[in-house]
Image (cartoon, rainbow, N blue to C red; front, side):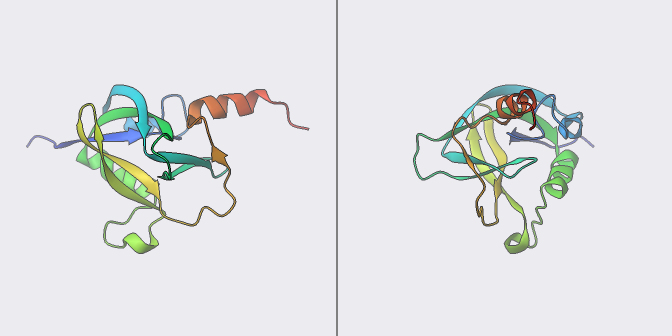
Length: 135
């Protein structure tokens, strides 16, 4: 039986070179780009995205083609329960990509005081924060 594949946009710790990237080893990167309509916020060790108030807001994403089984692993990582959306930490939402319909994980909890990240690029942000000496 052939595996079904899904397209997913990743923007945080799943991106190449970061902590959770190995979860995508069963898939392949098919592109990179900017996705408008979302704003990024710093939760500390990872980012969260929410629908943006302005269409000019955008986030840096990597696009992957992954098997359904990997999508289920990502659901677990992101705290998404398709049977209980209300209590899920993130929701898996449909987005359009240059490669067809895809998925992205959108934060489903109050942001509280999570700082807005204007650049919208978690890799750049995490690289810069490691260069700044701690006091």
